[in-house]
Amino acid sequence: MKKLDAKMLEELSESEYKELVAVYCRLSDLKTSITQMHDDYVTQATPPELNKVQAIRLIVDEVFDDLDRYLRPECDPDSAYRTVEREE
Image 1 (tube, rainbow, N blue to C red):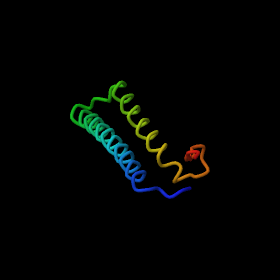
Image 2 (tube, helix red, strand yellow):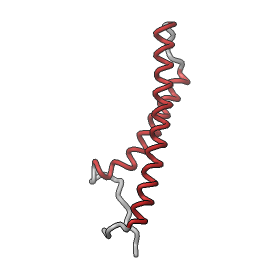
Image 3 (cartoon, rainbow, N blue to C red):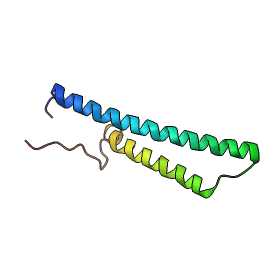
């Protein structure tokens, strides 16, 4: 693999930073939803509604899929996700 020049490295860093911000925002939404669900249960002994649980599951799935796409090649190099090299 060729060395990354400064411009390519900057673009890669910006892309990864944007992905990190997006994941952070979704995790913040997830934390808010879980906290609200917990507080409702503690104060009113109300079990969570199915639509709220489904929404939380969707957020978790999206966050995991995004992180998996970026981190699997580093954590599990033999996985199906391969880094793609450009043909020159």
